Length: 290
Image (tube, rainbow, N blue to C red; front, side, top):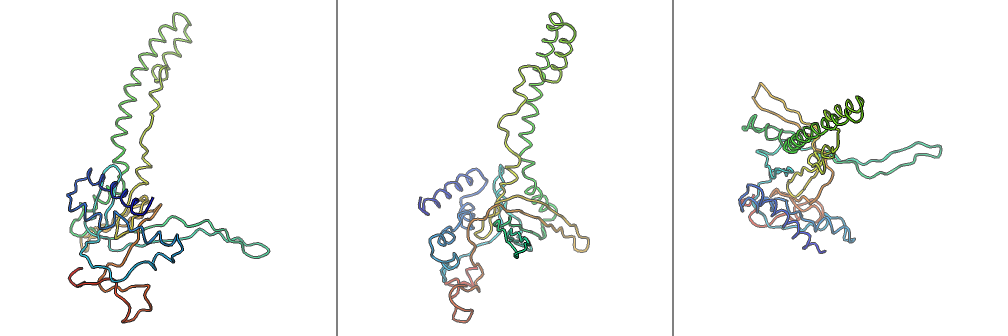
């Protein structure tokens, strides 16, 4: 499958998602331009021996007007945009290497890379506590998603328990006549506990996993697509400026896409040393394009 086919498939999936979300066509196009369709050509070029992915980024790219705001994709709910970008995002990358001291020196065991950790902090600004509500609901969205499933399971079990209890009590009365007092007591207890046959419906089948919803949150930002889960959230309510500040720890299980320069004064990083002759990243009237 070619890269164009892969990108077309991604577009089709995203169009399906947009069709189930309260987005206008212009909003859907903007989200796609902001990184929902990731530039895979840079990341894939290194696999064919063409150098590092950064060496394939061309200078003089056309300047475009774009608001680079963080967008979350929440399973079972759809797309949620942040009211305002965080004040700071700290990207923590770490390798898992175990050094062991031996008589002949150190031995190193390389286990690859640990999960990346994003520390997201900021203030909700003028959105106040309602902005915190949005972030908190994103943080624990898997709980909201599982509410409907939990109610369905509870209702199903209540119905099944009642049916099995009546069936068990009926068996107990029959056992009292043919099997004595022991059979009667056993049948009655089993019926009341919902253990009398048939009891297969008590074991819920194919229940949507709450863990799957928790581990499938995606963060879209300026060409990067992070997939992972929230580990913690802290909210500070300040009395000096009445601001509500937050800190969120997002553990990532994968990262896709490729992030490029987006400021008009940025220059190409692979076209020679930093000097006045270094090609700029953008062409055109960038002062008005950003």
